Length: 226
Ligand code: PRT
Ligand code: ZN
Image 1 (cartoon, rainbow, N blue to C red):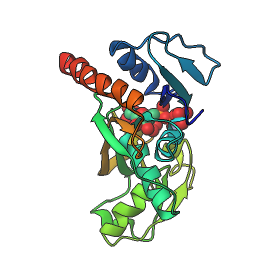
Image 2: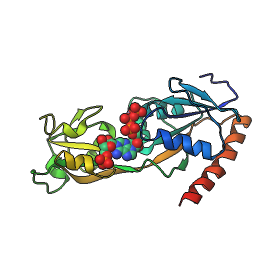
Image 3: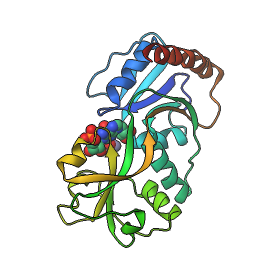
């Protein structure tokens, strides 16, 4: 990505739960894109706008570092990356432009259904499997609980059965995955939805003009969907 480009660059998830709705929203706002599966970058044919399609985990850092101008990402990932970068002294500022009406989920702690659970203090000294160690530690620390993490990038829900952990801290939407794995949701630690974010440094006048045109369109699209 050329940082000096006059084209507004927007990072979206390449393939996953946010991809379809991210593209649909930008299209509903009037940007035309033709997407080629294999390509990282997609140019708009009617606006000076490029889409960068990446893993969702990379989106907050790209925006915080100013490599891209805007990003569409889940608040859960945004907050986890922010905490991680803060702890490691990397740039972690970002402007939140809009909450988007998709990607709703919650990050919750769940325990095996046969385990008694009387509150968060029961997790003291236990091992919790998660992909979100910073959000989890923040929550536990605030409550004076010290647990160990098992950091997994996937299949978190099978960790207790596999003997890797006593509990999980994972994203939940319908609850079907927890249920299927014999887990019961006990603590909601973070509620999330997709967000539109912007890099901290001001945009060029040309790019700002596109954003100024985009935001009311997003509001209009979302209002019409309510
Ligand atoms: O490849 P990449 O890194 O880009 O994708 P990913 O696999 O990390 O993310 P992806 O596509 O699974 O999710 C992207 C974002 O969608 C998340 O960061 C959330 O902001 C949002 N989101 C909304 C969800 C869910 N709902 C969700 N249910 N992300 C994941 N899940 C998973 C959850 O981890 C669990 O495995 O779905 C399962 C639970 O769903 P239920 O319906 O059974 O409760
Ligand atoms: Zn991811």
